[in-house]
Image (cartoon, rainbow, N blue to C red; front, side, top):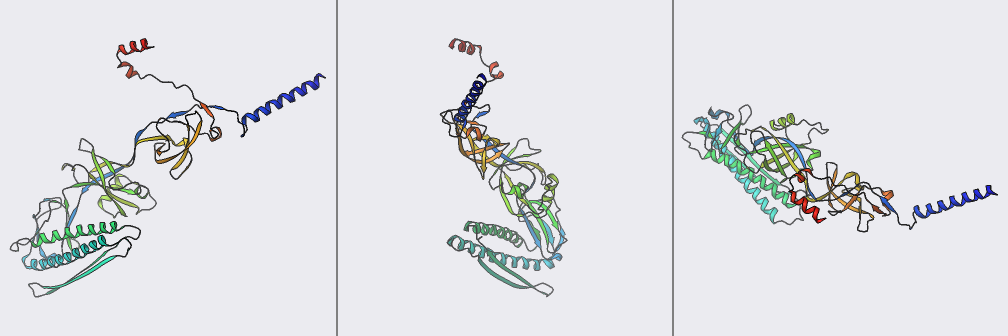
Length: 431
């Protein structure tokens, strides 16, 4: 009798426990449950800045090239590479016997450049007045075929043809075509200034003169035509980005610059980010030595020009190394969460758990601006002062009530040392 009683009692107790477990823990249970959360954070706002550190070299803001088609026209070079020249400084003396022929070449160049300038200005006017419905290129052409006779009686034919083709990208806007035309106009005007400076000189003492103030960068006498490159006095910083970084850097991005020899850091901005791979140059060679990069695509490296807010001092030579930090992402008064506390993350959006006003866990959607040092910087979704918890979908998805450990506050010793004893007495009395 006792044996069967104990068996029945055991079955009854087991059934009771099982029934209660089902009622308490099943998905359809209506019993209010509480869950202990050991790790949580109270959100606050801060300014978060993501920076891209880059090595850079100082370079001229601009460079003007002067070409000499007739090699026999040069009688004597007066300047050397690295010399400082002012506008109007004589660079080389010309042979009187050859100067007329060189002058005729410059006059023909002047005519061709003026014709090209007129065509580009006309094309830009059409772009400004046209409607965006048309994306066909606006083109124009002109030809200038002159002949000159030198003192030896030989006839020199100059064939200076100009073709202007300003195209609006099919996937762009008319603003892109206008910007391209403006760049062409600026380049033509620079070339015209060079030619006009040569033609305005005194024919009694023919000489090759500098049209601008600057530093003689290079004298190339080994190629035809010969050329002289003059650097402008204004300096900028030249650096490069690879294809993974190219999308992050944009014109007008803020930059912080430190150049050895200048005590304080300098504020700057990104002047231009090239869309074409950088050509081989001494600037690119220097950058590769400063910041060697192992990349799969060898040509996918792009030039970035950085202009400082204040002029770079003359004590800094061209080619000097500079440390730059480009601000590629910035969020003011933003909330940041640990990346591990997000789930269902996809294409800049995710979810996380917070405690609502009723003390229950609640899943909320958030939008992510960028990631920084293991944290996701949010653009919206979680308000400052919210209590965010480490996500556990199995425990929190049903929105149970939560209770948290009592927060412990460690005293700040510096604050305690600097607090007057009267404050302690007032606190004790107020209790």
